[in-house]
Image 1 (cartoon, helix red, strand yellow):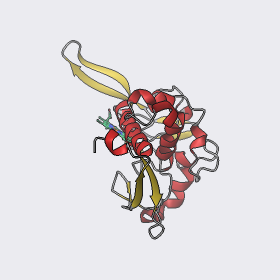
Image 2: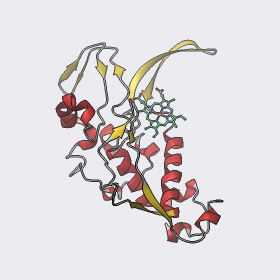
Image 3: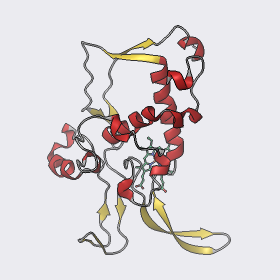
Length: 217
Ligand code: HEM
C-alpha cells in the first residue's frame, strides 16, 4: 500500500484495483464474517427440481451463508454448519481458517463476481445469490409487464467501495494491536438479522507522524 499510495494522501476508490491484497482481505472477511446470519428468505412461485431435489411451490428458500456457528443458535447448528456455503471445503479448503491468500488470484471486484453466470464461481454470497424472480410491474409505457430480474443486493458497487475505503484507510493509517488483557473473540456476534462483533478495544498506533495531518485530524 505504501508503494502504490505513498504516505502523503488519502486513498481513493481508483486505488482499489492496484491493491489486490486489500481486496483479498476484504473478500475473506466477507466470507468468514459476513454481515448477515443468513440470506434473505425467498419463496418458490412454482414446483421445481434442483439437482434431483424436488422443491414444491410456496417453499421458503434461504441462502445458508453462516460461516461460524454462534452459540445462540446451537440447536440448529449441525444442520446449518453442514450445509453452509461459505464453509464448503471443496470450494474453500480449510474453511475455518482466515486466509486472504485464497482470493489472491481473484481479479474481479465483488460487483463483477456477483454477475458471473455460474453462481458457484462467485467469490462469496454475502450479498445474495441472485436467484431469478418474476416481477409484475406496471409501467406508464407498457402497462402491466412481467419481467425477470435477479434478486441480489442492488448496492453492491456502493457497499464495496465504502468497505474498501474504510478498511484500506484503517490499514494505511494505523498499526492495530490486540490488548493482551482483552483477547478479541472472533466467534461471538451481536445483532438480530445483521451481525456485528461483540464490542472490543484495540490499540491503534499511527503509522507515521503525518497520519493526523493527512486525515485532517
Ligand atoms: C455490507 C453491506 C451490504 C450487504 C452485506 C448487503 C446484503 C444484501 C442482501 C443479502 C440482500 C438480499 C438479496 C436477496 O434478495 O437475496 C440485499 C438486498 C438489498 N440491498 Fe443490500 N447489502 C449491503 C449494503 C447495502 C446498501 C449500502 C444499500 C443501499 C444503499 C443496499 C440496498 C439493498 C436493496 C435496495 C436490496 C433489495 C434488492 C431487491 O430485492 O431488489 N444494500 N442486500
